[in-house]
Length: 119
Image 1 (cartoon, rainbow, N blue to C red):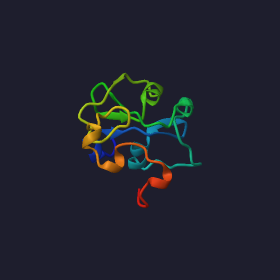
Image 2 (image 1 turned 60 degrees about the horizontal axis):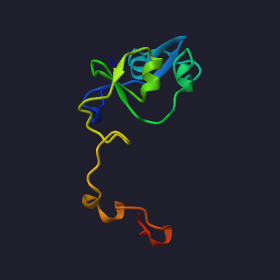
Image 3 (image 1 turned 90 degrees about the vertical axis):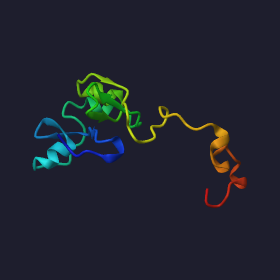
Image 4 (image 1 turned 120 degrees about the vertical axis):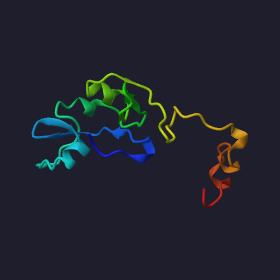
């Protein structure tokens, strides 16, 4: 089914790729040894070109495939829901620790001149 990525607890990352007018998950196309002609990205139908590049992942209902966002999942024609047990920080979805438990440099915004050099 494709390469499984440890950060996602073995869930396959879906990256649509058009090869010979057929849409494949990129990893599946590579593993199957399909010949790529002109570099083509996205699905063959072009609907993924309308999707945002913002990573706000959702998963297939069986939690086997992770999609970059709900637009990509809808474009692939699958039913989806929030991912369960994904071992990574997902901006906007993962709970953060209370502010007072964060390192001081992350506890708010500092004016540029007050920020440490290695910030």
